[in-house]
Length: 260
Image (tube, rainbow, N blue to C red; front, side):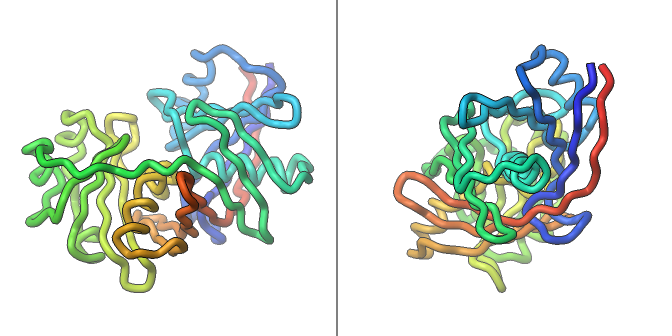
């Protein structure tokens, strides 16, 4: 069996920026174990698979070690492949996922995704080892929906964090750190060693929590965010009722072929 593979940098307009995703279009689903093995072999934060379902598409995402329920950058990359390589030309693209329906619209070079809004709740009790694992002097507050969201004082605090990934993995939690930005509304970083990703370059699913959090805190519906990973990425953010809109550009890197 031969399958096409596209590697796309998402949430960036520059090659080697943003978050790389492996995109594998399928005509029908293949075995779950094979999808996991392909993701492990790719060794990227995400390998995404999608199949046609009428006028829509079903979508699934795999890290090198497990399947996850939501991934923004790989969804963005999938939309890019469908619109710019596979000739999809309808005004709206619909993906069916384990997190419900996700829609994407192309506006110029930007792809805007409609995702669930996951407002995190403040925790009075959080893992005692969290502060030590992150190697930080002061935590403003800790919140959680799917992942721990750690609020810090300033952009420099986010930038300077040098986490102990072994300690975070032992906690079994994915961790978002965030603070107000200097040139953007807010900045963040994302650590998920328990999912096989020490630090994710740009994380759409984390912004399902970050957007409602900062929208309420800043009293703004439309915001601009930046993820401060080594590669870096820029995210358009909008709170829209019980949904969030996040958008960005993509850059094509390569096309390959699996033979399995």
